[in-house]
Image (cartoon, rainbow, N blue to C red; front, top):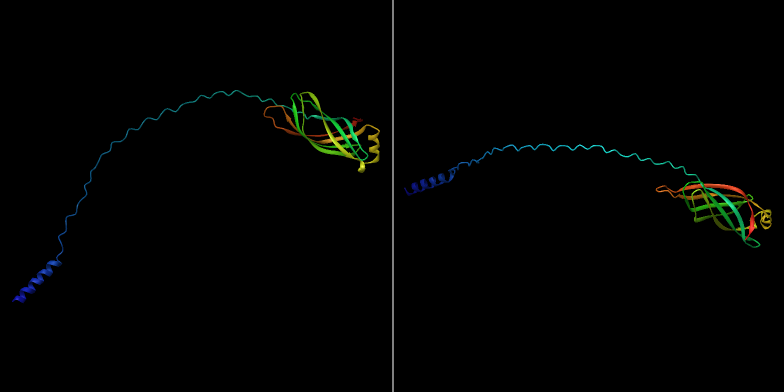
Length: 196
């Protein structure tokens, strides 16, 4: 009989372990409904009206710039040796404009009686007033070894030389905000050779 009780008790215990635990009631969330009032819409600010301001008409005068004129005034013999002779050439620049011009550099070639004499670059050459002229000097050396004998004879005899002077000049007009420009020149004529 003890055995039967024991089996019975054991069976009851096993059944009690298999019985599911009671399920707790599900918690329902609490929802609070808030009624929102619409925000007042501000009135738009008035758009400012700008009256057009009359712009004064600016008349920029058109300036015709005339190129300066170049000429050789004289050719002087500074120092004469048997082979090399030193010369000074006086260059005249005429400014036909109603404003001053400045020559910052001149690149030149000089020919005498059809033969090449000299070339070079002169910097900070000269300042020419309006409707006026100025002169500047170039000093150069000539080697007569490669020259025609007749040219040497003409120079020794101080005869006039048929010259040609050509090149480019860097010109800056004395006008506000006006750019510099390059003036090409090619002039020829007759110049007296004089001793100094």
